[in-house]
Length: 595
Image (tube, helix red, strand yellow):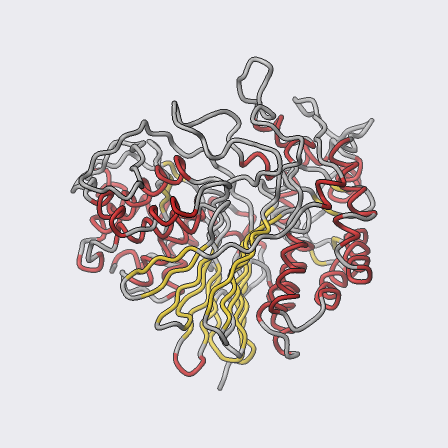
């Protein structure tokens, strides 16, 4: 796509830096690196450096991913950490198989369908639900690391936690992004003694250029390294987590005001002790001779990305004009989201997922697409195996997930193993609750459940329930060509994760962009909504042409997603790619630049 490929870093930077001047304080970081021997791509230079050092010392991709992820919990605590959960996708070079770990947070046994409702049955205000013990799910990140290290790693978990503990003790320099995220959450952090003590020293966000330390988190990492994950899931840390959820550490002298009562949650030590990582089979869809692997439920990413690609496979996108190709991308996204919202939740049967990813279902959905845009929201299809036409049989419902937090790591080693790992604490700043004495910022992941039914007379697959895991849009993806890695990619961004990953894959596979161009290109996100989103550079380039095709005016948003990716070339060459502008510039690195 000629024009879109040209609108890469320079154009995007001019638009976004003016929208978010805090990014101007970011240090110079290379968003692209090409070389050999292994690669790491993340949102943070310290994180990437930690991962690369593990690789240089003989660790494999799993080792490096765990060490890097633990460090993100220090330097990017508002996006991810051991107070949250995520999805770990792993390609084993020896067996040429893709494996997954579902480390999504789980609801406590006390959770009910009405837990996020007022007495009259209406939904709680989102912020009233978020900033509370009610929103905190049982964290799955640490269980994910333990499972990955035991199954595929070459180093003990305790050793892999040491670099992050050292960073937490030594500290790191506060940049403008970190300060801005604290400032955006200051009213929330200020309600809790433990959160204010950590993030609001002297009653204000830490200054840019100051050193931020989290010695309590360093001690927690070292305790886990010494005594194992049982201290977190059934020992003293578990008791402290449960206490913070059941009786949030609300300050007698809060900093700032908060409009809502801070509700307690029902999580118990037993809920923590019963948590188990899951190992579902990955989703798989074929696309133009490639095999695209993703995450099954409770993620909706694997099915939504796969279904949209299956719909798009019926078009020669590279032969179309920019506007016509983007039109089909947007329509395929809307159709996939309609089906995701209706059918995908934690307990969705595998047979339903298989139908959502079938070529016959995609063909039926594709025939609803015309030369002009469908009115949104579109109705879901019926993935029942009986496909005869374009008719749909249900009322539409748009997506409601507008969170923008989360982070993604992409790692490869010299043996050809690959990790694509997306993890989160949900909103930027999570629930706002730091576990006293432990330095752990807790998630608000249970607000990813639908608070009230959204599907009319049909069953809603994403209502809360005891021990249930909320639906996620996280979409770690690994693409194979002839059984070997071609591209691994993922992104943060709430529900825009799905469209970000999809658009990058379309850019790279169909539109003749290099991977750096595919990541940098301006983005749009259509999630079956009457008001799609797009970055300013996208609107400037394509808004008028797409409006002429019947698409509504785009809502301008400064940035969509913050992807990391790796492409695998000939003779072991790796191209690691992070964002050149979004979220303050990412950090990509390789073990060695030459042969």
